[in-house]
Image (cartoon, rainbow, N blue to C red; front, side):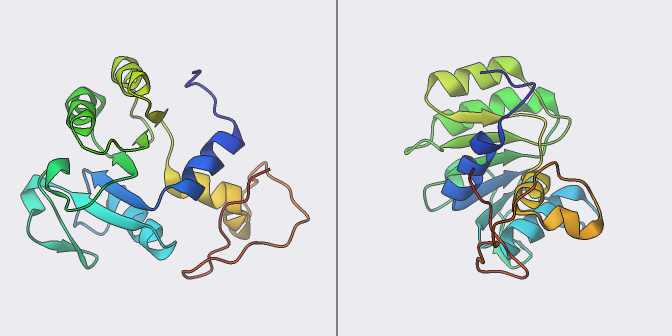
Length: 173
């Protein structure tokens, strides 16, 4: 797969099918990007499990924080990586040991590791690199346009209302 460019239907398919997210590198610091992405995903109805060994056993935004992926008590659909690219191979290896496997490995803006992505894809896991699910959700739902940002997505269709504060959901083509 070409990880330099993603089709909107690929991203929308992921965001519509995922229900549980493990956020590796989640922060309790409310000015960190991982904190407000966690808050946004929770508001959109996703069940998010923060992963941060330094915060394990504590809550971030009312969600119990775990030390590692294997500690999460239920199956995970997506692993969202908020760590430096050098940490990605170990996180992907940990995800590949989960049973059942996650459906998606998502690497945040600035995070890309082609070798780890190839290993995940070889196991049947979808991969997204150098993207933010918060931004992609906002772009594909039209919410990002509320602030005057050109999302590049035009639609005359009535938004699909979902649970959560001002949540329109992501529309497939």
